[in-house]
Image (cartoon, rainbow, N blue to C red; front, side, top):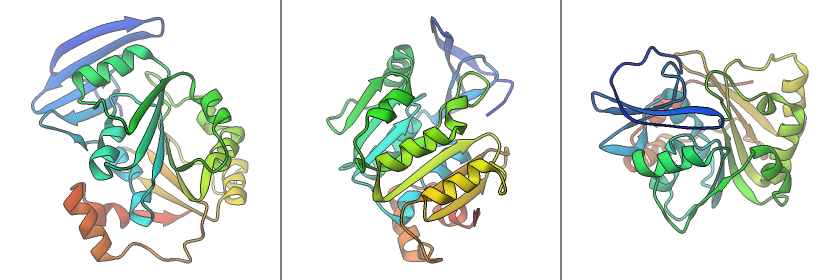
Length: 248
């Protein structure tokens, strides 16, 4: 998410990969690595409530099937972990983050809870994904970004292979892409070979969230009652979000 950030610097630190900056403006708090791109954004009074549209959109697989175990690749400020834990407190969540300093900032400034159901591994996501047992997770949410671009690993077919192996037979993959894979391209064709259903969501800032389900949906979309229940538990506009999804 690219912006020229304003507000005041609340915290600044660095590691071998660069700066990590926490900025506050109005009611929001932002994690940024370069003061231009927002890596994470929260409402300081409700840190469990995602602000960015793409974060909200990445939660949509839960409208189809509630996971018992979820894997978050790329912690950032902990936005997705916070939202998942608030929505599904019994769900076991495993987050993977490359930088220990980012984990520390997420706990100290973004309300990432210390909880028995939340485990955080500090490591490159690729070997962690490689070592995951087959069918060991029900949801993978991948949001691997550096200061200004998506990690190349997230766009490789091998990465998709590993996700498919780690997912249960009713599992879902949600990927945040800066550009959607071409419908006729080798990546999209590969995803279709591994998953029963594939869908896309385009945000107002032109990010794309790609969804891939191991189980065929047969055209069924979540009903109004289901979406209303989710909205009560986490008010992010579930009916409006699901209305912007289309088959890929």
